[in-house]
Image 1 (cartoon, one colour):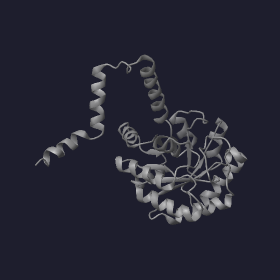
Image 2 (cartoon, one colour):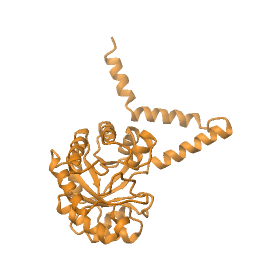
Image 3 (cartoon, helix red, strand yellow):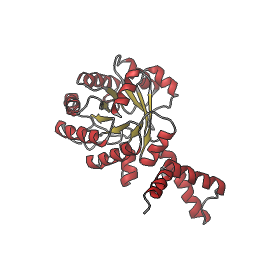
Length: 286
């Protein structure tokens, strides 16, 4: 599946990758017709462990979620690799583990560990030359060039746009296939990053700080990949809060049309492959 992602990137068409936090959301994204899935570190921390995205989730735990998503769908998974979980030596193992788990791409970032969500305040970055070494380690350690290495910089919030763009060029020279300036907060940021990175493939994250844009506008600006980490997670949390409040305050579950509920139940069973498993049960019934 990694080769499909690289081919899509090289085609020049924008790849839109909604965020999946579990196998069910990954399947829903696939069924909706998207070309790729994004595995967010924030959503992994929140949904798997009830923790904030401040460097508390281990490499092993992240790899386990990569494997869960990649095994559930036929789409390429673009995965959050945090800082590579240490120095260049740790990056080597992170890349190998992610690749073995089925990731089509991973991004590593230049934050100081413990890192934090790219849309949170108080971030710090390591020296650019240290990150260059980590990018080189990531590129050298993949077993196949089909694995897409994405270099993320968080320098925008720390040192400004010029520093972030300069780092993008350094990371691309070190071998990164795609560069990624996280935490963009203005239209100037969105427009200037690809303009100042001619010839480089750029990724953009539509998190809470970044102004929303239509997919066509993003493509016209020259981005290669657009990720939407919370597009499934946020509405799911809000709908759950609403349902629980209704049960707590009203003493009963929210009213749902029985026909709609049965239709949803049937649709979910179809999405999850229940008919195929029931056929197997019948086939192997003793």
